[in-house]
Amino acid sequence: MTADDGTVLRLTDRLPCGTVVADLLDPAIDKTPAGRHSDGCRHCQGALTRLRGRWEPVAAAAREPAPVPPGLVARVSRAIRADHGSAHALRVTGPGGGLFLAPRVVADLVRRAAAGVADMRAIGAHYDGDRVRMDVHARLGAPIPAAAARVRRQVRSALLVHLGTEGPPVDIAVTALFVAAEPPDAGVRAVTG
Amino acid sequence: MRMPLGTGGTPPAAGPPPRAAPAMPDPGPAADSDRRLVLAARRGDVGAFERLVRRHTPMVYRVALRIVQNGADAEDCVQDAWLSAWRGLSRYRADGAASTWLYRVTTNAALMQVRGRRPLVPLSPVHDIATAEAGIDAVAEVDAVRRALAQITVEQRTVIVLREYEGLSYDEIAQILDLSVPAVRSRLHRARAELARSLEEWR
Image 1: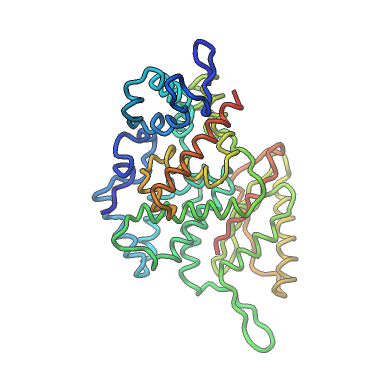
Image 2: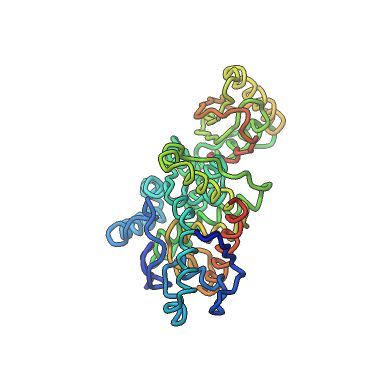
């Protein structure tokens, strides 16, 4: 950090009084006493002031709000309710007996199947025993119905491979848009069964 | 007896000032209410658990976002954390603070999220209005903090988030991360030093 007089203070520096600057870091940030020597030492007090000032942007960053995205609480509630009961399991009949898939598994399969589709990012999926609802983010500028159709095709074909059935209908809810310049982060791991 | 969140603990003198949004409801009636809800949920009351979800998702999302540094991953993390909490209700200690338990499942979910993926993309600005009003220098500095936070290890970032962003005491962080208080002090010191050095590089 640079003081008004242009001098640079580094954590590895030793002050004229012998105190290493790094030893003042925690007292400066926690605003706790730095010890008998430092409490009465002008070198230490000066360094403490500069350290506190340098830390102020961290405090400012901490004050930034982080509002909960719309729909997140509802998705969590659905996931919990789905996890609570297995009454909504998907039944796949076949020779030799029934096969039951927990809602979370159905949602997971659907979400994974949709992960590679261009122009859409699957954010979460939920199976209620009848239909799958998938929340997605769509690329700004892309034809959304076409992208949604690609998602459904890909989901159907993946479920056909995994389950031997096309599975339940898939309702797609576009909950946000993203721009192409954004990093193609996966952001697609949410599964709510 | 456990200290309430955001107060007390070690060190006893002034810690970081309270942040814009309280980390958790104040102790007392709200904490008791949390405990009652958790115990009800443990008996199978989904509605009680959903009340916890509504009450604490702001904290869970805030912590997750700052640890994983990405909005979409943070949403995943929130779902994972709540499902983990739901499935782990039997492990909740009735004499413990529900908030500590929730911080623990949240940080665990966030750590698992980050450890299982590729390197971080720094968090983009979340609140353009707030930062724009703060002036260009402040915006740049906050942005520098954001980038510096993304550069340190996730273990270091976690203690920074819990201490500097959530305002928790050393004792609380030790309980949440299952570490000793000296271990928290040591990790926090290294994290702060690393963050301070990273901030210098952005100047």
